[in-house]
Figure 1 (cartoon, rainbow, N blue to C red):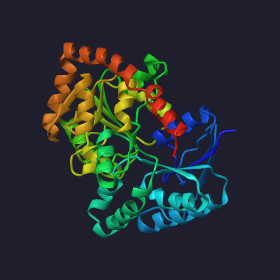
Figure 2 (cartoon, rainbow, N blue to C red; figure 1 turned 90 degrees about the vertical axis):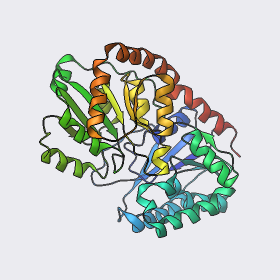
Figure 3 (cartoon, rainbow, N blue to C red; figure 1 turned 30 degrees about the horizontal axis):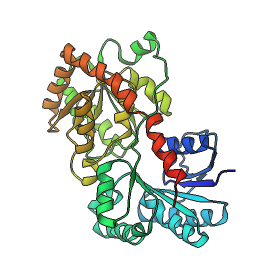
Length: 371
């Protein structure tokens, strides 16, 4: 019998594809998995082949949420059977570290981003300093650290002199069949379609400029699927700019249902701004979803994302978040048939290279050699 792995996250589990893929891979390897998260009133139901426990917390935001989450996690982890603890991101690390020390258990830290560089913290120096102190006190003692790309790994290694493994947020090979022509016509008619998707459609991720861009485009639909703090502002903007027929917003969807829409898009958008180090070095899930769906990409010139798109030659990279210039790039991308077809051809190669089936081999090797 392989060890029992307890995986902790701070979200409601529904849209966290990284954690889902990791847990599924380890489950398939024979580990017993318990995934701990939280549940919200609007949370969608989920079914997994391993055990799940979602905590119903009193607080939802800011310091009270994080305090309650960490206390509840500590006591949950204290009383359950565990052999390996997995903390996803800095907001679950402290209770996992304390429990690992108390019980002499192995700990894996999976940092999905530079947590202390997120926009919610960089303008709140006192709160940010608390998280920085937690990171500084714990990180040098960690033996099993994973992150999402080599740039973030390098920053951690230079700062804390701890080796960091890289497992990217790469999507599994897509096995969905294409939707029916009738359904496609219902969604977009005869128009070209752009898509933005994800659970982090937040400020400074380019969604506002994408909506404004639609004022300059004809016979094009922008579909936004997911959640984030900027969604209410987008809805107001759509009304004020009279773009109801050009921009549609759909809330959170189950992953495979979301990909039904992604498959029929003509361009996939990833528009992060370089307003903070975390966004500059981001490599979002949606980039690899677009690759698996074989749709060309239009991305902002963020270091890691731009490198993937340019090296694979699967789309266009732009510099400035100017709605009119962005609209011109969309027109150019869609009307240049030869270049667009080159991107489509290259996407077939990229999909064979960038898939979870390949990336998960790194994960399996890490768990075979835990310290």
